[in-house]
Image (tube, rainbow, N blue to C red; front, side, top):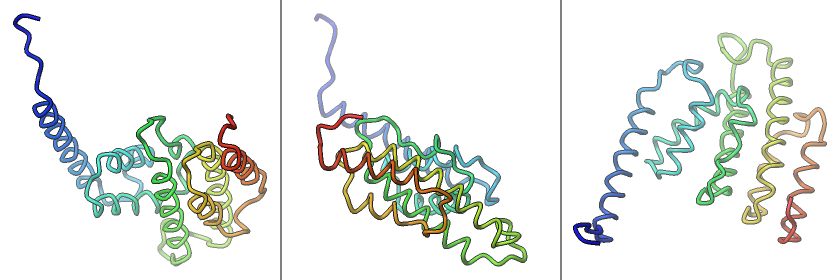
Amino acid sequence: FRGFDLPLIDDVEEDLSAVRSKHCAFVESMISVLPSQIDAVSISFQFRLLRVAHMLGIDSECCEELEKRVAMQFDQVSLRDLLPPSNRMYEIANDVDMVYRMVQSFLLHHENSLPDGSPLLKTPSVISASVKAKTAEVLDGYLSHVANDPKLPLQSFQDITEVLPGNARLSHDGLYKAIDIFLKVFLCPNYCT
């Protein structure tokens, strides 16, 4: 075409790199200005921000800090918050590992919280059991969703199914459903749900 110059590949790569750098800087600045109060920012927003940070490959220290913030409020997470993006470039295994780390941190935070002065635990035995049950229900729904990914490693799936204590679940039906889906996909890769 006359008068129309196609950009060179190097120019396009430089432009993409510059855009990525701007996006990274923007997300890092968003994370750095989050209020220190735990409930000041919705868990849904923080979770989306965390996923974007991981997809952009932002500094691991920055992501770890945001993971800890989300983990402390994990009992407020909904299944919708947990579901990974339907982006083919998004690695479900990385997402499962992130959720695993957050659940571990959440449980450790609750086990180490003292009843007096703790904003999360007023009566540890009663609230802890109900919080664990809600967490288990949401986690089992998440597991049923990610079990459909044929690239999900067995060890990652096994780790996240075992992260909660045995008494956390009121019913194991959701977990059994997730295991059934995973086994069908893992053993029969052509299985389609």
